[in-house]
Image (tube, rainbow, N blue to C red):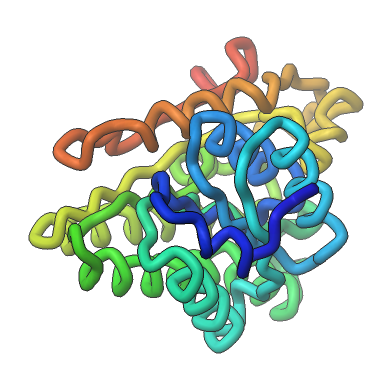
Length: 262
């Protein structure tokens, strides 16, 4: 049975501790399972307790250790509470996978509402900032000092899709956030990196097999890649010593229309 947060905190000699946001499904769930399989204790953060419990149970069945914390990454008090629970239980944080994200339907900028914009930016950018801020504070003051933050960017941090202004803007901003954290973290042994993922097979990309709008106006199916590829890549980045860092990694379905797009 999956262990509770309080029970997990009683373990005598702790392995490395990771927090994964958006851990209830998709990339977050896959990465959480991969980290747990590699021996990390994984704090699972998301908005839906039932989804987090499913991830937690899968990790427990595989012999890993995890705990669940329901939180809204767009709410600073909720984020602070989640990180507070983690520190109370484990006394430190070695890794944050800053993964929680969302999107809205494709639309040109004149068709977007302010609510559409805020929905995406508040989760993808402000949420990432709030989580990184709490993680940085912990890593800066804990002993031994330091840790790693991996931001989930996107190939949209570099090249947009049609009708994607909020998502593309948020992911371009994540690129700047990653660079700033990387620079600020040097003095404290905090490494920050970004993984830019293209067409991982999740619920959000399910429509790609039916067709996706292209820059030339056509709608074409696009290939996807297995979630396990993403999970393995993040685990690799996470396992490096803190004096080494994969600053940016682009991981994509080999045949997707990214190279040569436009």
